[in-house]
Image (tube, rainbow, N blue to C red; front, side, top):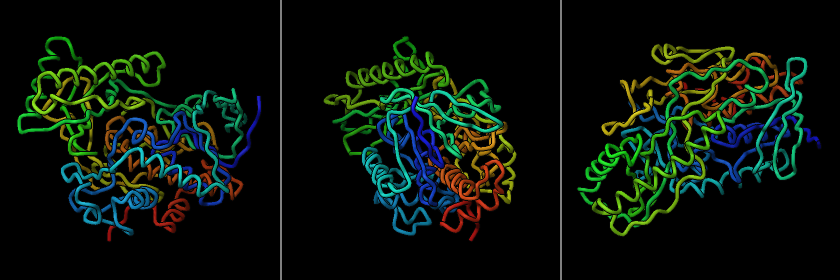
Length: 431
């Protein structure tokens, strides 16, 4: 088995992973990014979600995240250079009800990520179609991560590792404590339908038709449906399938993917036959992967709790900020709103560096929805822009630890925060 050596290894190229890789490389660390798909972007590109959620404090309209997340929006033409507020974004890309912005094209996001990776080629390499499949632990640290790809099995020896797998795979295999609490939020297969000409009747009839199909047993659980014309006036992007399952179980994930595709096609077939506006429609595509909201999380040196969100707890070692509402999806059909409960809207809250630090090994950070967070609070911190902010912080911390010849678990999070602020990132501060 061949061996590759690097300073920093980023496992997973989703929202957290691409930010972590760029952050690490820009601070001078030799960085390797591995990603199971043939492109970066995670839920944006592999699932098809065009939303930058967790960017905007809804009551004020202010951005609570800067850094790489805003850099991406500016590059995509959604926000002005130096944007700090929802008013600095293109009006046609704003969804004020949710306090979010949409990007115009998810494939363009793939190209942008490729371009940013290429610009850091002196310090950043990427291996697509590559999946971590095992780890080697020695003396309280990860000695190597084993990766499977077209080269076969390869050992990657890295001084510091960032787990951006979404499911805390690296942490789990390294023996770090993790949790996976039932019931897990359901998964969603996103899909798109072309040549739709919506009328005033389209949405209510579409909902009624799906409920009839559900009651007749032709369609399992669903929600909404979210019929969103995000990419073109005659192209429907659909948020609606709801599949219960465990994404950390290979067989169950495979079943969920198949059910998601079947449910998407059932919805399309029902709408084309019975809903005004869908008469001449055609199915464009479903996402290459199903969207996963919740699976395994680490139990880190600090746990972000619901109380932290409710009381807006401040931490000296805060390295990122969350602001999304408690977006809890149930494992049942709902047509009034996608989430359950109050949908509590927190004020911008601190995410401590210690929520990225798992217990058990010294050279691993975890960023994204699998960071150390309670089941209740993960409904807020799991979203795209919050994951980017955590990824940028983790990449920064990994590079600092490498340069200091230390370990990420030993770093003072305050120092990471200071480094992030110096690069116009890090936690939100009041004006």
